[in-house]
Length: 208
View 1 (spheres, rainbow, N blue to C red):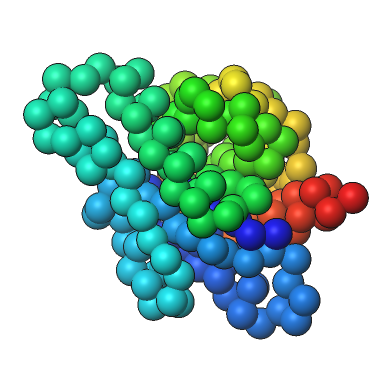
View 2 (view 1 turned 30 degrees about the vertical axis):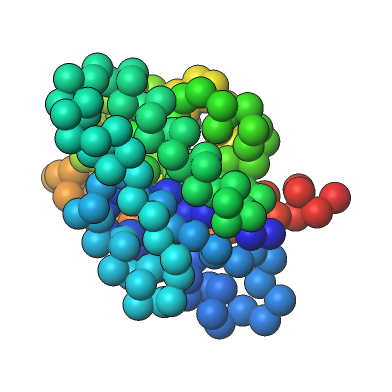
């Protein structure tokens, strides 16, 4: 299964996918392309180091500076989504993996890759999902709610926000005195495992 990995940040989950592909004979996926919605994503460096093609689809890159300055959030989302779709199709990608990707996808990409997009979310969905629930916002919300456990979820993407079918969940305890940073530190290694497992499950589903 040829995949495009969509990234916005440091790319530790991308690295987990790269490492698994390298060390695993008959790995069920192949990373064909890494797409970033910002040129500042360190994940791009990881892709280059691994010899993987990259594409930047930031609003400035795909709309031009003048239009990007005046466009509203929805216009930017659509422009980025359409550019990501074009890049993935050109590279022959059969599935999309959102690994720390912060732009909410909209438009044709959801339909054209229906059932073939997975996302990693840093909490146990359906709890603590939806608009604004990303990064440390999620961990702060988990701690504020007094939860006894948290973790991460890999799920299929649909037209909602964090609402698609769950493929994998990994749980960790919430400990007394936890901060968003310490909780994330416990969840991060589980994210790497869940990301690889979720992509392998998707490859299995698509091969049936």
